[in-house]
View (cartoon, helix red, strand yellow):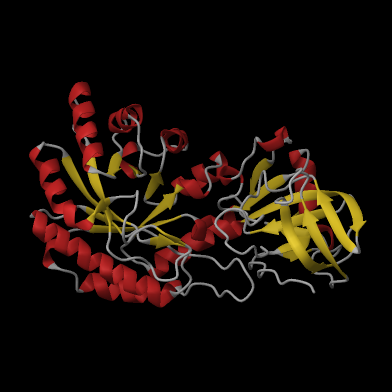
Length: 412
Protein backbone atom coordinates (compact mmCIF):
# COMPACT_ATOMS: atom_id res chain seq x y z
CA UNK A 1 0.00 0.00 0.00
CA UNK A 2 1.43 3.38 -1.00
CA UNK A 3 2.27 5.98 1.60
CA UNK A 4 1.30 9.63 1.62
CA UNK A 5 3.63 12.59 1.19
CA UNK A 6 3.55 16.13 2.48
CA UNK A 7 2.05 18.86 0.34
CA UNK A 8 4.36 20.58 -2.14
CA UNK A 9 4.54 24.24 -1.01
CA UNK A 10 3.10 27.03 -3.13
CA UNK A 11 5.34 28.83 -5.58
CA UNK A 12 6.31 25.96 -7.88
CA UNK A 13 4.95 25.09 -11.32
CA UNK A 14 5.85 23.27 -14.53
CA UNK A 15 6.56 24.63 -17.99
CA UNK A 16 4.92 23.34 -21.17
CA UNK A 17 7.34 20.41 -21.26
CA UNK A 18 6.45 19.33 -17.74
CA UNK A 19 9.76 20.46 -16.25
CA UNK A 20 9.74 21.86 -12.74
CA UNK A 21 10.28 25.62 -12.57
CA UNK A 22 12.11 27.10 -9.60
CA UNK A 23 12.02 30.86 -9.49
CA UNK A 24 10.71 30.75 -13.05
CA UNK A 25 13.69 28.73 -14.30
CA UNK A 26 13.79 25.13 -15.51
CA UNK A 27 15.27 22.67 -13.05
CA UNK A 28 17.39 20.99 -15.73
CA UNK A 29 18.78 24.34 -16.85
CA UNK A 30 19.74 25.15 -13.26
CA UNK A 31 21.55 21.82 -12.98
CA UNK A 32 23.38 22.53 -16.23
CA UNK A 33 24.40 25.95 -14.91
CA UNK A 34 25.63 24.45 -11.62
CA UNK A 35 27.49 21.72 -13.46
CA UNK A 36 26.04 18.64 -11.80
CA UNK A 37 23.63 17.12 -9.33
CA UNK A 38 22.96 16.93 -6.43
CA UNK A 39 22.00 20.58 -6.14
CA UNK A 40 20.14 22.77 -3.65
CA UNK A 41 18.27 25.69 -5.23
CA UNK A 42 16.86 28.50 -3.07
CA UNK A 43 14.23 30.87 -4.45
CA UNK A 44 14.85 34.23 -2.77
CA UNK A 45 11.52 35.59 -3.99
CA UNK A 46 9.77 33.08 -1.72
CA UNK A 47 11.97 34.14 1.20
CA UNK A 48 11.17 37.80 0.53
CA UNK A 49 7.45 37.01 0.49
CA UNK A 50 7.74 35.46 3.95
CA UNK A 51 9.55 38.54 5.27
CA UNK A 52 6.83 40.81 3.87
CA UNK A 53 4.18 38.62 5.45
CA UNK A 54 5.91 38.75 8.82
CA UNK A 55 6.23 42.56 8.72
CA UNK A 56 2.51 42.89 8.01
CA UNK A 57 1.50 40.47 10.77
CA UNK A 58 3.89 41.75 13.46
CA UNK A 59 4.25 45.52 13.11
CA UNK A 60 6.84 46.96 15.45
CA UNK A 61 8.36 43.57 16.28
CA UNK A 62 11.94 42.95 15.17
CA UNK A 63 12.64 40.01 12.88
CA UNK A 64 15.78 38.00 13.55
CA UNK A 65 17.09 35.20 11.32
CA UNK A 66 18.45 32.04 12.95
CA UNK A 67 21.48 31.21 10.82
CA UNK A 68 21.44 27.54 11.83
CA UNK A 69 18.49 27.00 9.50
CA UNK A 70 20.60 27.77 6.42
CA UNK A 71 24.01 29.44 6.37
CA UNK A 72 24.67 29.40 2.62
CA UNK A 73 26.58 32.62 1.94
CA UNK A 74 24.56 34.02 -0.96
CA UNK A 75 21.25 33.38 0.81
CA UNK A 76 22.58 34.72 4.11
CA UNK A 77 23.85 37.96 2.55
CA UNK A 78 20.44 38.52 1.01
CA UNK A 79 18.52 37.84 4.21
CA UNK A 80 20.92 39.86 6.39
CA UNK A 81 19.99 42.99 4.45
CA UNK A 82 16.27 42.48 5.06
CA UNK A 83 16.01 41.47 8.73
CA UNK A 84 16.79 43.31 11.97
CA UNK A 85 19.25 40.85 13.45
CA UNK A 86 21.04 37.54 13.05
CA UNK A 87 21.10 34.84 15.70
CA UNK A 88 24.10 32.54 15.74
CA UNK A 89 24.95 29.39 17.66
CA UNK A 90 28.71 29.03 17.09
CA UNK A 91 31.89 30.93 16.37
CA UNK A 92 31.74 29.56 12.84
CA UNK A 93 28.34 31.12 12.35
CA UNK A 94 29.77 34.38 13.69
CA UNK A 95 32.25 34.28 10.81
CA UNK A 96 29.38 33.64 8.38
CA UNK A 97 27.36 36.56 9.78
CA UNK A 98 30.25 39.01 9.59
CA UNK A 99 31.13 37.83 6.07
CA UNK A 100 27.51 38.49 5.06
CA UNK A 101 27.97 42.12 6.04
CA UNK A 102 26.19 42.08 9.40
CA UNK A 103 27.32 44.46 12.11
CA UNK A 104 28.27 42.92 15.44
CA UNK A 105 25.63 45.05 17.16
CA UNK A 106 22.95 43.20 15.16
CA UNK A 107 24.17 39.70 16.09
CA UNK A 108 23.27 37.61 19.14
CA UNK A 109 25.05 34.42 20.15
CA UNK A 110 23.18 31.59 21.90
CA UNK A 111 24.11 28.01 22.61
CA UNK A 112 25.59 25.99 25.49
CA UNK A 113 29.27 25.16 25.58
CA UNK A 114 30.74 28.36 24.18
CA UNK A 115 34.53 28.11 24.45
CA UNK A 116 36.58 30.95 25.89
CA UNK A 117 37.91 31.74 22.42
CA UNK A 118 34.33 31.94 21.12
CA UNK A 119 33.35 34.33 23.90
CA UNK A 120 36.40 36.49 23.23
CA UNK A 121 35.72 36.72 19.51
CA UNK A 122 32.08 37.63 20.12
CA UNK A 123 32.91 40.28 22.73
CA UNK A 124 35.53 41.79 20.44
CA UNK A 125 33.00 41.97 17.59
CA UNK A 126 30.40 43.72 19.76
CA UNK A 127 28.02 40.74 19.69
CA UNK A 128 25.35 40.19 22.35
CA UNK A 129 25.96 36.99 24.29
CA UNK A 130 22.82 35.10 25.25
CA UNK A 131 24.37 33.53 28.35
CA UNK A 132 23.33 29.98 29.16
CA UNK A 133 24.60 29.76 32.76
CA UNK A 134 26.09 31.65 35.67
CA UNK A 135 29.45 30.14 34.80
CA UNK A 136 29.29 31.49 31.27
CA UNK A 137 28.58 34.98 32.61
CA UNK A 138 31.63 34.78 34.88
CA UNK A 139 33.85 33.61 32.04
CA UNK A 140 32.57 36.38 29.79
CA UNK A 141 33.24 39.00 32.47
CA UNK A 142 36.78 37.69 33.00
CA UNK A 143 37.57 37.58 29.28
CA UNK A 144 36.12 41.05 28.69
CA UNK A 145 38.22 42.41 31.53
CA UNK A 146 41.39 40.97 30.04
CA UNK A 147 40.79 42.58 26.64
CA UNK A 148 39.50 45.83 28.08
CA UNK A 149 35.99 45.74 26.66
CA UNK A 150 32.51 45.96 28.17
CA UNK A 151 30.57 42.82 27.25
CA UNK A 152 26.97 42.89 26.04
CA UNK A 153 25.20 40.21 28.06
CA UNK A 154 21.66 38.89 27.81
CA UNK A 155 20.32 35.94 29.76
CA UNK A 156 18.83 32.98 28.01
CA UNK A 157 15.95 31.86 30.19
CA UNK A 158 14.82 28.28 30.63
CA UNK A 159 11.11 28.92 31.18
CA UNK A 160 8.87 26.68 33.23
CA UNK A 161 6.64 26.15 30.18
CA UNK A 162 6.99 24.87 26.62
CA UNK A 163 5.12 25.34 23.37
CA UNK A 164 2.47 22.63 23.38
CA UNK A 165 2.82 20.32 20.41
CA UNK A 166 6.15 21.77 19.29
CA UNK A 167 8.42 19.51 17.29
CA UNK A 168 11.47 20.24 19.46
CA UNK A 169 11.00 21.40 23.04
CA UNK A 170 13.55 23.91 24.27
CA UNK A 171 12.01 24.89 27.62
CA UNK A 172 10.26 23.44 30.63
CA UNK A 173 11.99 21.22 33.16
CA UNK A 174 15.67 20.29 33.20
CA UNK A 175 17.38 21.49 30.03
CA UNK A 176 20.95 22.15 28.88
CA UNK A 177 19.70 25.44 27.44
CA UNK A 178 19.40 28.64 29.43
CA UNK A 179 19.20 29.55 33.09
CA UNK A 180 16.27 28.27 35.12
CA UNK A 181 13.81 31.13 35.50
CA UNK A 182 14.04 31.19 39.32
CA UNK A 183 17.78 31.96 39.16
CA UNK A 184 17.60 34.65 36.48
CA UNK A 185 16.98 37.79 38.60
CA UNK A 186 20.08 37.21 40.72
CA UNK A 187 22.12 36.72 37.56
CA UNK A 188 20.83 39.96 36.07
CA UNK A 189 21.86 41.80 39.23
CA UNK A 190 25.31 40.21 38.98
CA UNK A 191 25.67 41.38 35.37
CA UNK A 192 24.74 44.94 36.31
CA UNK A 193 26.97 44.99 39.40
CA UNK A 194 29.93 43.87 37.31
CA UNK A 195 29.53 46.86 34.98
CA UNK A 196 28.52 44.83 31.92
CA UNK A 197 25.82 46.05 29.56
CA UNK A 198 22.59 44.15 30.23
CA UNK A 199 20.91 43.45 26.88
CA UNK A 200 17.78 41.62 28.02
CA UNK A 201 16.28 38.14 27.79
CA UNK A 202 16.17 35.33 25.27
CA UNK A 203 13.19 33.09 26.03
CA UNK A 204 12.80 30.18 23.61
CA UNK A 205 10.24 27.53 24.55
CA UNK A 206 10.16 25.32 21.43
CA UNK A 207 10.24 25.03 17.68
CA UNK A 208 8.30 23.71 14.66
CA UNK A 209 4.85 24.60 16.02
CA UNK A 210 1.86 24.67 13.68
CA UNK A 211 -0.80 25.37 16.30
CA UNK A 212 -1.50 29.12 16.45
CA UNK A 213 -3.26 28.84 19.81
CA UNK A 214 -0.27 27.06 21.35
CA UNK A 215 2.07 29.79 20.12
CA UNK A 216 -0.27 32.50 21.38
CA UNK A 217 -0.36 30.87 24.80
CA UNK A 218 3.44 30.54 24.89
CA UNK A 219 4.00 34.15 23.83
CA UNK A 220 1.58 35.41 26.48
CA UNK A 221 3.42 33.36 29.09
CA UNK A 222 6.74 34.73 27.79
CA UNK A 223 5.57 38.33 28.19
CA UNK A 224 4.38 37.63 31.71
CA UNK A 225 7.65 35.88 32.59
CA UNK A 226 9.77 38.71 31.16
CA UNK A 227 7.86 41.22 33.28
CA UNK A 228 8.14 39.11 36.42
CA UNK A 229 11.88 38.58 35.98
CA UNK A 230 12.46 42.26 35.29
CA UNK A 231 10.53 43.39 38.34
CA UNK A 232 12.31 40.91 40.61
CA UNK A 233 15.71 41.90 39.21
CA UNK A 234 14.85 45.59 39.36
CA UNK A 235 16.00 46.16 35.76
CA UNK A 236 14.07 46.72 32.55
CA UNK A 237 15.35 44.63 29.62
CA UNK A 238 16.28 46.61 26.49
CA UNK A 239 15.26 43.62 24.32
CA UNK A 240 13.21 40.49 24.80
CA UNK A 241 13.74 37.81 22.19
CA UNK A 242 10.46 35.91 22.23
CA UNK A 243 12.04 32.97 20.45
CA UNK A 244 10.43 31.61 17.32
CA UNK A 245 8.78 28.26 16.99
CA UNK A 246 6.94 29.02 13.73
CA UNK A 247 6.65 25.73 11.86
CA UNK A 248 5.94 24.74 8.29
CA UNK A 249 3.88 21.71 7.25
CA UNK A 250 6.10 18.79 6.26
CA UNK A 251 3.81 15.80 6.24
CA UNK A 252 0.42 14.67 5.02
CA UNK A 253 -2.45 16.23 6.95
CA UNK A 254 -0.46 19.09 8.47
CA UNK A 255 -1.85 22.60 7.99
CA UNK A 256 0.12 25.86 7.72
CA UNK A 257 0.49 28.05 10.78
CA UNK A 258 -1.93 30.99 10.94
CA UNK A 259 0.71 33.64 11.57
CA UNK A 260 -1.79 36.48 11.23
CA UNK A 261 -3.79 35.10 14.16
CA UNK A 262 -0.58 34.90 16.20
CA UNK A 263 0.27 38.47 15.20
CA UNK A 264 -3.07 39.87 16.31
CA UNK A 265 -2.80 38.19 19.71
CA UNK A 266 0.79 39.33 20.23
CA UNK A 267 -0.14 42.87 19.27
CA UNK A 268 -2.82 42.86 21.94
CA UNK A 269 -0.40 41.40 24.47
CA UNK A 270 2.23 44.05 23.74
CA UNK A 271 -0.32 46.83 23.97
CA UNK A 272 -1.20 45.71 27.49
CA UNK A 273 2.29 44.75 28.64
CA UNK A 274 3.60 45.55 32.11
CA UNK A 275 4.94 49.04 32.71
CA UNK A 276 8.49 47.77 33.28
CA UNK A 277 8.47 46.52 29.67
CA UNK A 278 7.09 49.77 28.27
CA UNK A 279 10.37 50.77 26.56
CA UNK A 280 11.50 47.23 25.74
CA UNK A 281 11.99 46.13 22.14
CA UNK A 282 10.70 42.70 21.16
CA UNK A 283 12.03 40.31 18.57
CA UNK A 284 10.96 37.01 17.04
CA UNK A 285 13.71 34.67 15.86
CA UNK A 286 12.83 32.58 12.80
CA UNK A 287 14.70 30.16 10.59
CA UNK A 288 12.70 27.30 9.14
CA UNK A 289 9.58 29.40 8.55
CA UNK A 290 11.53 32.00 6.58
CA UNK A 291 13.61 29.80 4.31
CA UNK A 292 12.41 26.18 4.51
CA UNK A 293 9.80 26.29 1.77
CA UNK A 294 12.07 28.25 -0.59
CA UNK A 295 14.52 25.38 -1.11
CA UNK A 296 14.48 22.41 -3.48
CA UNK A 297 16.98 19.56 -3.51
CA UNK A 298 17.57 18.20 -7.01
CA UNK A 299 19.13 14.78 -7.46
CA UNK A 300 19.39 12.59 -10.55
CA UNK A 301 18.21 9.00 -10.90
CA UNK A 302 21.20 6.82 -11.74
CA UNK A 303 19.49 3.43 -11.61
CA UNK A 304 16.05 1.86 -11.63
CA UNK A 305 15.78 -1.60 -10.14
CA UNK A 306 13.24 -4.16 -9.06
CA UNK A 307 13.60 -6.18 -5.84
CA UNK A 308 10.93 -8.68 -4.73
CA UNK A 309 8.35 -6.77 -6.72
CA UNK A 310 9.32 -3.38 -5.31
CA UNK A 311 10.66 -0.62 -7.57
CA UNK A 312 13.59 1.48 -6.41
CA UNK A 313 14.75 4.71 -7.97
CA UNK A 314 18.36 5.17 -6.90
CA UNK A 315 19.73 8.70 -6.98
CA UNK A 316 23.14 10.35 -6.84
CA UNK A 317 22.14 12.19 -3.65
CA UNK A 318 20.66 11.13 -0.36
CA UNK A 319 20.82 11.49 3.39
CA UNK A 320 24.40 12.83 3.33
CA UNK A 321 22.79 16.05 2.04
CA UNK A 322 19.21 15.65 3.24
CA UNK A 323 19.27 13.99 6.64
CA UNK A 324 15.92 15.53 7.59
CA UNK A 325 14.10 14.22 4.52
CA UNK A 326 15.53 10.74 5.17
CA UNK A 327 13.67 10.70 8.50
CA UNK A 328 16.81 10.70 10.65
CA UNK A 329 16.63 14.22 12.05
CA UNK A 330 14.11 14.18 14.86
CA UNK A 331 11.41 11.91 13.43
CA UNK A 332 10.21 9.12 15.67
CA UNK A 333 8.18 7.44 12.94
CA UNK A 334 9.51 8.11 9.44
CA UNK A 335 7.17 10.07 7.17
CA UNK A 336 7.65 11.36 3.64
CA UNK A 337 8.63 14.91 2.80
CA UNK A 338 6.99 16.21 -0.40
CA UNK A 339 8.83 14.94 -3.47
CA UNK A 340 8.31 14.88 -7.22
CA UNK A 341 9.83 13.75 -10.48
CA UNK A 342 11.09 17.16 -11.58
CA UNK A 343 11.28 16.04 -15.21
CA UNK A 344 7.54 15.25 -15.15
CA UNK A 345 6.28 17.75 -12.62
CA UNK A 346 2.51 17.71 -12.30
CA UNK A 347 2.06 14.54 -14.34
CA UNK A 348 -0.29 11.87 -13.02
CA UNK A 349 0.96 9.10 -10.77
CA UNK A 350 1.59 5.79 -12.54
CA UNK A 351 3.53 3.57 -10.18
CA UNK A 352 4.56 3.02 -6.60
CA UNK A 353 8.29 3.53 -6.01
CA UNK A 354 10.79 4.10 -3.26
CA UNK A 355 13.40 6.79 -3.89
CA UNK A 356 16.70 6.02 -2.19
CA UNK A 357 20.13 7.55 -2.16
CA UNK A 358 23.54 6.18 -3.04
CA UNK A 359 24.80 5.34 0.47
CA UNK A 360 25.41 1.79 1.68
CA UNK A 361 22.87 2.02 4.50
CA UNK A 362 19.14 1.25 4.67
CA UNK A 363 18.70 4.63 6.41
CA UNK A 364 19.27 6.41 3.10
CA UNK A 365 15.67 6.90 2.01
CA UNK A 366 14.24 10.00 0.39
CA UNK A 367 10.70 8.69 -0.22
CA UNK A 368 9.11 5.39 0.82
CA UNK A 369 6.41 3.63 -1.24
CA UNK A 370 5.07 6.76 -2.93
CA UNK A 371 3.02 7.11 -6.10
CA UNK A 372 4.92 8.88 -8.89
CA UNK A 373 4.90 9.31 -12.66
CA UNK A 374 7.14 6.70 -14.28
CA UNK A 375 10.76 7.76 -14.13
CA UNK A 376 13.94 6.40 -15.63
CA UNK A 377 17.65 6.78 -15.10
CA UNK A 378 18.60 10.33 -16.00
CA UNK A 379 15.40 11.92 -14.72
CA UNK A 380 15.58 14.52 -11.96
CA UNK A 381 13.97 14.08 -8.54
CA UNK A 382 12.96 17.12 -6.48
CA UNK A 383 12.76 17.01 -2.69
CA UNK A 384 10.94 20.05 -1.33
CA UNK A 385 11.21 21.91 2.00
CA UNK A 386 14.96 21.82 1.45
CA UNK A 387 15.67 25.43 2.40
CA UNK A 388 16.17 24.75 6.11
CA UNK A 389 18.19 22.09 7.93
CA UNK A 390 19.32 20.57 4.65
CA UNK A 391 22.98 20.56 3.72
CA UNK A 392 24.21 22.24 6.91
CA UNK A 393 22.41 19.69 9.11
CA UNK A 394 23.53 16.58 7.23
CA UNK A 395 26.54 14.21 7.46
CA UNK A 396 28.22 15.43 4.27
CA UNK A 397 31.45 13.50 4.86
CA UNK A 398 29.73 10.12 5.25
CA UNK A 399 31.18 7.62 2.76
CA UNK A 400 33.03 10.48 1.01
CA UNK A 401 30.32 10.90 -1.61
CA UNK A 402 30.40 13.96 -3.81
CA UNK A 403 29.33 17.28 -2.34
CA UNK A 404 26.07 18.97 -3.24
CA UNK A 405 26.05 22.33 -4.94
CA UNK A 406 24.02 25.34 -3.82
CA UNK A 407 22.65 28.27 -5.77
CA UNK A 408 20.10 31.05 -5.48
CA UNK A 409 17.45 32.22 -7.93
CA UNK A 410 14.91 35.01 -7.75
CA UNK A 411 17.32 37.66 -6.43
CA UNK A 412 16.41 41.28 -7.11
